[in-house]
Length: 187
Image (cartoon, rainbow, N blue to C red):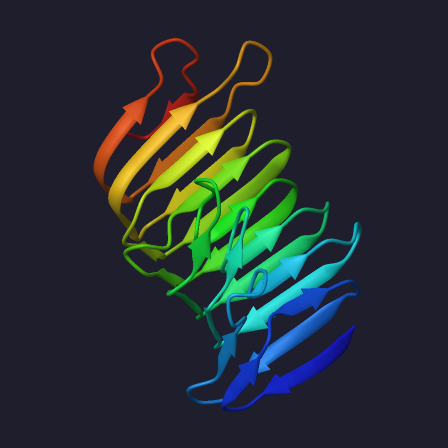
C-alpha cells in the first residue's frame, strides 16, 4: 500500500485506483477546484485510508467531497468534508454506492449532505454531520455517537430495504419512508 503525505494545499482531487494511505500535515487541504470529487474511489478490492485532511472544492454528480463507487475498504479518520457541491441533487459531502466505508471523527459542513445507497456497509463513529443524511436501497449503516444536525431520511424499494443502527447518536429530524420503510434500530 503506497503512503502519501499531504502538506498545505493540494490542488485537484484524489482519484484513487490503487490501495493508498493519505496522511495530512497540519492544515492539509485537498481542493478539487470544482473538477470532480475531492476524493474518488473507483477500483474494486482496494484499501484506502485518509487521515487529518480537509476535502473541499469537489463538484460531482454524487459525493462532491468523498465518492465511493467500488467494492473497496475506505477509512477516513479525523477529516473535514466541507465546501463541496453536487449536480442534480446528489449529496455534496459524501456519496457511497458500494464498498465498506468507515468515517471516524469526521466533520461534515452544513451544506455537505451525505447519501448512502445500494450494496454498501458504512459506519459513522463519533462524526458531526451538520446537514442531511439519506440512506436508501439496501444500504447497511451504523452510527455510533456523534450527531446529525439535519434530516435523516431512510427509504427502501420493493426489493432492497436499508438497515440503520443508531447507537447514542443525536438526530435532529428523522423520517422513515411510509411506502418502503427501512429497518431502524435504536431510535
